[in-house]
Length: 454
Image (cartoon, rainbow, N blue to C red; front, side, top):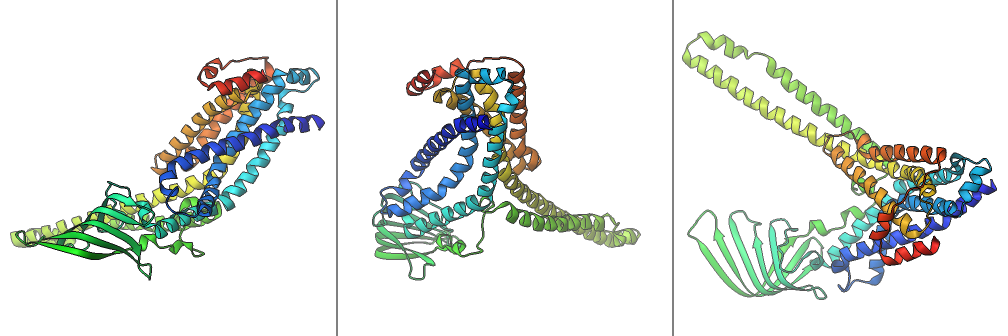
C-alpha cells in the first residue's frame, strides 16, 4: 500500500505541471486566434476573462488525457532512471503490480472527466457561444473585416475599407442591397455608423455623403442615381439577438450532455422510421401497373396517348417523392450519426486516460529517462497519432462511411493494443529504447531540463 502511494505521488506533480503548461499553450493559441476580435475593441476586461474561463472547458477535455500520458512517462522514467523499478522487480513486484495504482488513479480521473463532459463542458460551451453573440450584438463591427465583403446579414453584402471599432464607424462603404428582388441597389458612402434600434430587432446603418444606384431587373434600360448627404438603412438583426440565452433554448450537439443527446437520437430514429415507411409506400404504390394505361391501349391512339401521358406524369411524381424521401433519410441519418459521435466522445476521451497509462508506464521503463523534454516529445508524438485516428474516424462517421462507435473508439482500441504490447514486452524483458531523434528536434531549453534530470 505504501509503495502504491509512493508511485501515485510520483505521478501527481508531473500531472499537475502538465495540465498547467498544456492549458497555457492552448490558451495562448486561443488568444492569438481571437486577439483581433477581443483586444483593443473597448470591451470590459472582465468580459474577456469570462470568455476565457468558458473556453477553458474544451481545453481541459483535451489536456487531461495528454497530461496522464506525460505523468506516466515522467514518473516511470524517473523511477527507472534511479533503478527503483529494478529494485522493486528484484523484491518480487512485477510491472503489472506497479501499474495498478496509476491505472486506478487514471480510472478515477476518467470518471471525473466523464462527469465534467456531461455537466460542465456543455454548459460552458453554451455560455461561451452566448457571450460571443452578446459581443457581436453590442459591438456589431466586430464581425466586419476591413476590405472584405461581409454577408452575415441576409440580402446584404457590406464592404468597409476602414473601420473605427471604438466608435463603430465604417469608412468608404459599399453596400449591395438585394432585399427587394425587383431591384438591385448599390449604396456607396464616405462614412457610416452602425448601431441597433431601440427594439434591438433592426441593425441601423447611418450613412453620410454617398450615392444610391438602382437598377430595375424587369426594365433593362431603367437606371437611377440618387446623391444623399445622409441616409439610413434598416437591416434585420435576428441573428444578433440572444434568444438562446433563456432557459430551455436551442443547443448544439456540443452544448448537451449524453442523456440529452440520447433523447434527441430516439426522436430522430422515430422520424427516420416514418421516412423509411413513406419511401417504401411510394415504391409499393408505383409497382402496380396503371390499369388505365393497360385498358386504353386498344382503344385508339388518342386514348392510348392520354393514358401514356398520365402514366408518365405518375412516374415523374413518384420519382420526385422517392428522391425527396431518400434525401430526408440521408440527412436524418447524418444527424443521428453526428449526435452518436458526440455521445461516444463523452466517454472515449476519458477512457484514453487509462489507455495512456498503458502506454506511458512501459515506455517510461524502456526509455529510462524522466526529463520533461523527452516526456513531452514522446507524448506529443503519441497524442498526434491518437488525435489523427479520432478526427479521421469522426469525419467518416459524420459522413455515414463508418459507424460512430468504431469512428470514435478506434483510436482507443489501437492505442490500447499498442499499450498492452508495450506492457507485456517491458514486463517480460529488460528493454531499453531511445528516442534520440526527438532530442535533436526539441528546443534547447527542454534539452537542458532533460539533461539536468539525467
